[in-house]
Length: 352
Image (cartoon, rainbow, N blue to C red; front, side, top):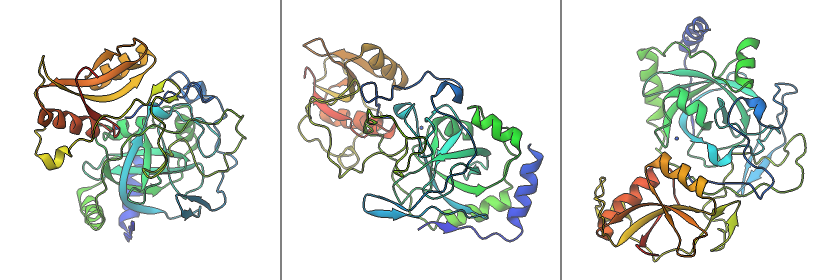
């Protein structure tokens, strides 16, 4: 359960200070009907971006759990944040907009859509203004899912998860318009150390979640979406690990799900080094992803420092780390891939 922050006087202090200041699996949803729009302002993503009317929505159920949206005027909690990015660009959010990974937005399970919140990184005290326009994350150990743009502004994009404070606010129209356009609002004044100490103490009462695996998201249906997404499932929703996975050889857009290799050891249990030794003649590789589009494979490889290897048939481009001399070193490469958010990465024999 999330710890409710009850701070008498401290919230008023930080609100006054704030007023003075005014981290991927890859999914290419081309065939699903929602091709990612070009990067840029929110206006480059199809669908109106408006604060009115505000949408609360009916209770909805995800993976057997019911979530009841609620408008809590004094909402102020601590918990953990994760983030989602380009793999879901252009997907419909829960309020009918299109997800802009470069914008400063977020997903929350129950707050109205949209809601404006101040998100504070508890390790640094940095605070930014964020617009919530989506539902999620649907893992009870995390409080909020930030867009990549929000995580980058807050300085936590290199982390899988981070401790945060989320406090509902009512910014002026100028700041609202800036966030609606896809740009970041002015960063708030850093939270005082005295208040951070209280917030961190509350965070320590919560179990620390594992970094989320950035799995392949289900493609959006071909049928036109209604103006308001009433399913409760927004752009950030990824099926739980117990859900059916795509069949081997299936295509999700141009993302290829190839045959899995033989089971591999857990690198954390095998004592693998965190700095794998790459060998020019190694017998193992770590496959992060595979594409039918070479440009997509090249883009991901540049992003994560991997290599692109063409399949023997010449129709698939694989993004891989390695080769490695032995399976132990490959295990460290696998840990590196999963730390970057690629939960479907696996060890294969070189040449496969």
